[in-house]
Image 1 (cartoon, rainbow, N blue to C red):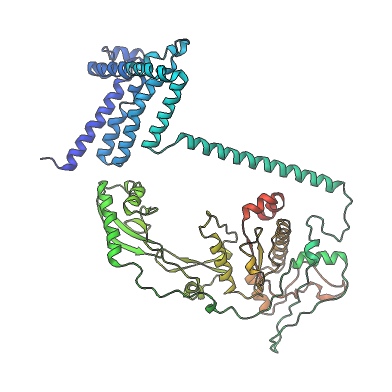
Image 2 (cartoon, one colour):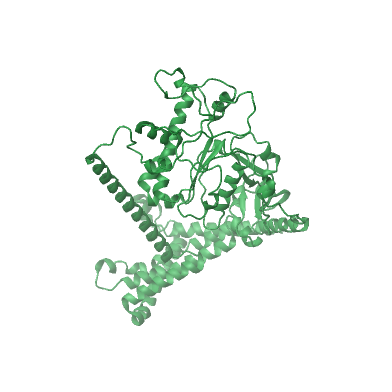
Length: 569
């Protein structure tokens, strides 16, 4: 007595053999040249039986007979478990429908007025010619083609869910967006060329002014930050800000604007904000009961067993949002078969999506990540209180949340100086930006960290207007944003020169040498020519400067020519 699995394999083998037999019977021996006609005197590669089947199929369905082998091939693949049964049934219905629509369309195209179209009449078959008569009589030639096109689209949507009209609309929309971007880039290049030509014709500026970058508007509101001297043995609790009231030469004014850049509210060194300002995490009852987790695991196993994937769950890891089940497949089960069942698992679990990690690195199991029925809210306060943040050795630690196992995840911004946050509306981009800024404020004082905030929409970053860490007030004008970006490039180059002059590899090493009392040199001398200390660096530690840009895409579209180069640098 054969087992169910053996019967399925025999059925699948027979169906695949039938598909191959039909395919070869439809291949004429003339395709092999003179050798084919000598080797197959019956006129068919599969003998008399193949000849009878081919002639019957071509006479009845015409060109539609070429699609007949697809149906048994799909049935055989489903019997072997190579594809889900539902998918095979949908594709089989699509092939059967096209088997009728194709010869009917060829028959309608033959109007009897074109020799080229008349040559296609034999490919229409008896069924196509019979269906052509009522279609043309009821709808006319053009109406019949329109009806057949509608039936083809409806068949595609009903079986595989693919809508050619929607795909065409998306392609047209992508083409329109690309054309608009190309025209905008060309217009920006034309405007930049006109600006350069106008600047070349204009009267050259005096040597004391900055020609490439317009910092006049920013420098007019800047108060030069106080000079910070090296610490002396006597303790000092309050530092006085000394402002020089002497008149500076134009060149020195421009240099000061470039060196110190846009200055915001005066930074007052103080303690870090208390963590009690943040909302505390509420008491947790029970995240997910063991019974609920067991039920989800049973659904995963039963769903995989439906698709002939045997195995068992050997463990699970529960995080705040998803639970990862460790599934060990039975011997002989290919991992690729499990990876292709993510949509079917999501349907069975009634989940938005299911992620399959095949296999889990370092483990002999496949990870099935299932969303928790009730996602847990991760509070920033519990991440900042965690040892992972308190003991972090990173210079700019940022709290990013919890990982799959529920442990706090903290990263170092200095190891990824360019961080791009992308996502759809409501996906949490603004929450992430606020979390990053808050994390840095809880680690650094205004003396060791300064922010440059750019918010063209005046929505997300306006709440930080009174933050003492600001190097400049929150920038809302796109043109001012371009100026601030250019200043950031100049400040970066100035710091590179300063580090190179002193042989330091990072800001941390430079500041450490300064705290140890080492004599450091400036990149350029200042003061009178006869002053021997004009090369000595006395400006105090270099703070980290973090630039935050909200809605970067809108900023690029507004002042593309002015911000692309600073961003690239």
